[in-house]
Image (cartoon, rainbow, N blue to C red; front, side):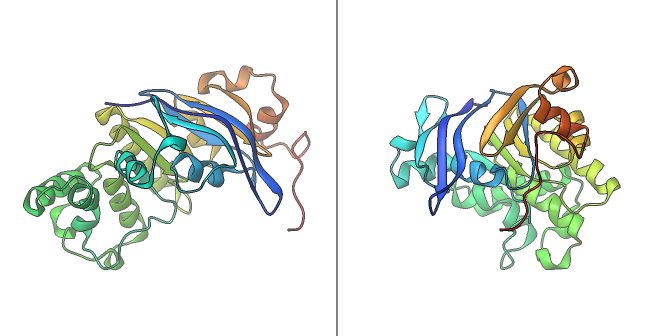
Length: 255
């Protein structure tokens, strides 16, 4: 089962400097949305606010009818057990084997017995193209591409209703990028999860997600169906998707 995730008027700043300036974003139930934008536009900060990892200065984030602002620590932790996250740098646990990494939420979040969790982990590893021989290895014994698959497996093993993908193909070669994108698409289709991804690769954004939202200087300047981006008359979006040097987006210089 999937859910709708929405942000309304989200504001966040640091040391008096605004980063998010009243963000409104809808991640529709059962659909995949990709968040794009120039560097330093606030994408990572917005993700942390959506995941409850960073308190907002103002605004609301809702998972269905549940407002994160109204939850205590325990309730927030329980809600986040239903979120699968693929981190940009994988964030695998070096002290755990591959299968234990994949089964982490099943064991520690769902209370599944280790024997059952191992079976689920092996099935998930197979779904991301990894055989049982890697199950008892440590993450350090795997290549970067295999580690990315393990991290994806961990994100989807519990079939979460909400899947967050933080720049899932960063640093990968074109062939491996295509493989990971295909695996992500298959996982979303199989589980029916609501998905939100962040990427700087416009080719992936165009081809792999139902909807697109653009963040610029801490505000959403466009959101809609990915198939509509070329017909948009939004100058910010036009400059980004066509990689134009000239336009309303100016490169930031200095700190």
